[in-house]
Image 1 (cartoon, rainbow, N blue to C red):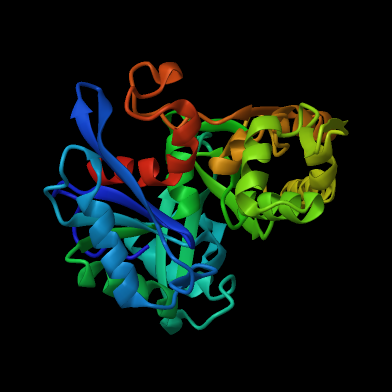
Image 2: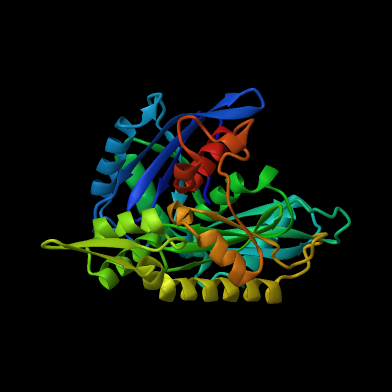
Length: 373
């Protein structure tokens, strides 16, 4: 995405979604990093919708409030690396001949018109040459990414209204991959599933770059709403049941009727979630089939078949989800570790932010990594 200033100044990461914003800032510790500032702030309804900013002034005020309330060290910089919505971005890896970098830049702009469904003058276009895994390739891979100016400009405006200077913008998939793919290299395609509050994103990473992205409306909040409607309980109770029982235990609902206590054990949370889970599995299969049937040779030793799935986002903590996806997809499924490229001992997570909670900070941590690197 358009890099507005150089990244020499210290900056922090800011992940903006439809329902909340998350802040993180890292500090260099030898060869690794440490989380020194973090926080989140809820975004009220009507301010954001499907990645588009509807009220710049209100969002700016929320950003200001979020910055004031960060945990850890106070944010003493106004430079920020911010996210852009995945569902509004066009991302494609294209094959280009091995020519000089100067000629390649001109050629990419011309070639991008064949992949982007909008006039070039209406988008911010960014590209980067992907270092090959196989140095003997005759062509080179170039990642192109475009986001409509009508989407990006309100983000820039909101940040400036909040007193911040955007150093760079980045789509969520790039930030997520930076945190979850060890050393940002994978010898085989890996599917990352970001199960967020309002949508789920599919990101396929192979070699040294993101290769494919898509988004669907299935979400963690949607799961809660379905449980609420099916069991005829309020959203708060539905969220509690979802968190407590998930997919792996039967629900015990205690109903008091005068002196009679009846126990209902019917696994009702699981039953309520069967329809959206079936849809989720089908959508994952469609994405895998599309990628594997359209992927051009990338020179990967592992070929073009996806061999692993990593889960992130707040919804990734749903009990039993890993087991269900493993059985249905017949692939290795595990929780991603957002600390993989940050901490010396990532398996333990940060003392400031648990591994479970950090899954919802995956994008913010990836943005903070870009800021400090």
